[in-house]
Image (cartoon, rainbow, N blue to C red; front, top):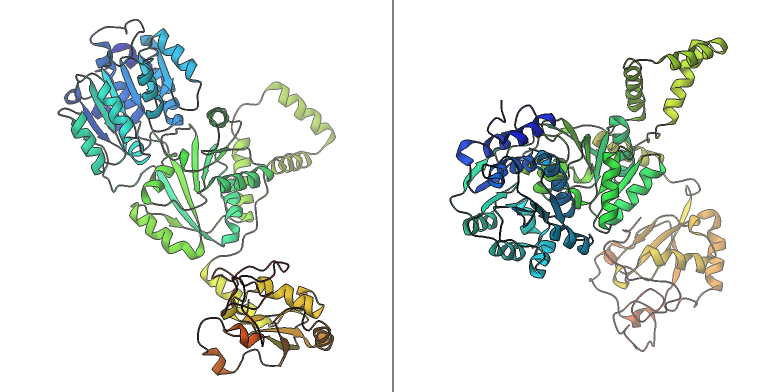
Length: 598
């Protein structure tokens, strides 16, 4: 029996749970050489580390007895980086030690501290918590560490990254020196090695996977899309896979809210998980996923570590992670404990090379493919529908209803109605822009061949005496032209901004009307002159090589006296420069603005 070396009641609990073989990390922590020793363990995410250290400390807590003693001062302390992971560890240990009569208590930030104090005062065997809250209980005296036989640091690298080093050292310094110390970490950077050296004695090093080895149970796929189609791509990927559970990662809370609104509007049962939520809200979101009341979780990287959701079959990176470690931890929410999972990276096509570098750094081989099209999704829906009809038994009540339907409708009509009902219950897939290099080239060629937009076949060019040197920007130039010429923005064609002037085109059919309006409004925009430039969209070559920097205001306005923050060298008043009037809503030009000819 694989778990024969464990205490009898623990072995029974894990067998009843469905475990037939230990995972590699579980096998090594219960081996004879690891008995009663400090352990320094690194293993890939989803490898069963929580159960592993629960098995590893079982003999230490029992000390040869059949059951645990009456609850009193805690015998084991488990420290986790996040509230979600701590509460998950609490649930895992409760079923693992249920037959031993263990009392497991959690102490995490965001929960009622008085409830935790009461639970500690009643006595317990194991305490699971986050560093800040555990330190708080130790300082208050509500958590007594004198009887601790084992201390476990789970996701130690993450706790150091989050800045908990001092808290961890203070907690460990308060615990008995003869305790066992088990340190579990996905990676082993130098700070972890130093922590282990200081607080562990003759620790056994356990490493169940190569640091560069990719997760074998995850199928990685990557898709390049047009930037405007990222949300549509998420919709189609979710629809194609129709996973029992899916997690979509975004970079910011705002993007989580935006994507959640999009998916909910399209009919997906979705919840969110981010740092702005209270602990109760987080708990409800996770419970909704476990109960299958929700099938999609949109989250920031707060959910990238430790969270284990049974049935999570799909992970989507709606935004690329910042580094290879985050990629691995996000992806590791699926493919856990020997189960298969799928991970999809969605990237704007212009960032494909960055995505490829990220995958190489994480030692991941991803298959690049197109986002599923609506036709592909409908074909997959049909396959799933046929599969669902061939599974399960039919009750007599269902057969009775079927007979009554056949009396009034044909079998074909009933089947068609059933298919329509099934399709109506599913969100509609989205049409996407083809982001392949060939398709992008064809679209650009087609745009060039199409020529000018309707109404601009015959145009006349005009010039303005402000350019890049005067902070010219289409955002304020366009309203200025419309006011001066009594036209709308739809009557303005291309705008080309040069160093000392700007040129724009007007349909020749309204050019005379535009010139008349310019004469009537001359002088309304202080210092800005608009005049015809004929058919030439560019100034003389010499002007293109003008010196950089704004022209003196005296060149634009004779007898001008500089005043205020505008000063010499600034743009004319009304052109959005410092000191200019605010009534135009002008803003300084910046490199992120539209380019000449936009």
